[in-house]
Image 1 (cartoon, rainbow, N blue to C red):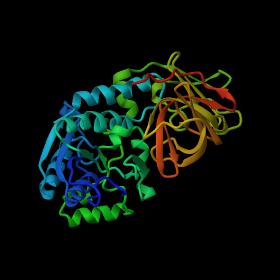
Image 2: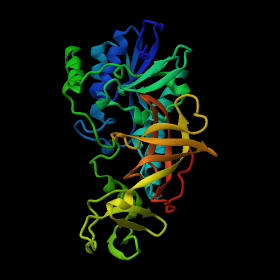
Image 3: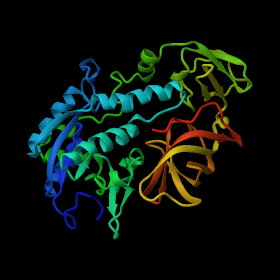
Image 4: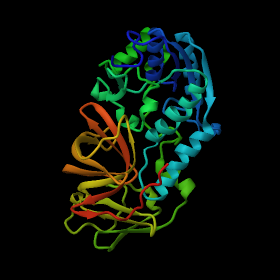
Length: 386
């Protein structure tokens, strides 16, 4: 058995399908209903301010999207509701987004939304109402072992795998998670063709790639509205000033473009953001090789099953669409210590590291500090546990 939607070994379930208004969640809900489950669709209203909603099809929480989700539910023939989770979303995702950038870290709001909204607030409400599972359009697999335990695995189609942003799910959440799209190796075009065959007009709707709560896709502008502007220095590794900026929060580790440095590097090569210090509002830049990270420490680990005991070897993924890299990892005093087999670049505090054992998701943690060429970066405090 490779997915909770299978009815060969499981009884008919009462399923709450989270319908974003996109093609993936619509097909997932349709597949769950076709499998014989008692499915109810729900769209999450995540903003109380209509002006913050996007127009068109770029987001996942717009007024248009709620209408699209309702029409898809009508075609599938399932009940449909809109649930207001705007306040919870603001507190757990949007405010966290601001706080992390203000502290010089780089958050992942989609991962936080899965942890705090879709598989916490939504799941808790679903269970209280008597539902057995929450169904989403994520591309990942829940595999049931012979002993009844559940494991989270990568999607059958690695090109669409979304297990990274689900690496925060624990045992309890996995027990009530259903991903009907994860176990079939179908291209996105085939998913769209299936949607069209089912009469779902969202078949041709474009995918959303931006942060859903930033209306125009301008992350730096969005942050500036809340955090304001504060001119600071851009310095090189020796501490010499090479430029200025209007807010340290507008940069990310590994960034090359948009630095607007007036002084060229001595060797004429591009410079990258190496460090962001919100305390003195300073951004440090340097050569690409200074980005090489050999080890890191991550906090607040969450395990998709039993926590690993002792040191182990795994592969790690550091970004939603990043590649895997071999690592050695161990939990020491509640923190995850990771050493890379080969140096990696663009690793920023606040990002999530997700560990894999083959296709199985072992768990995730939030990066707090990195080691470059044997030197521990001390410029940022560890994220607060939540």
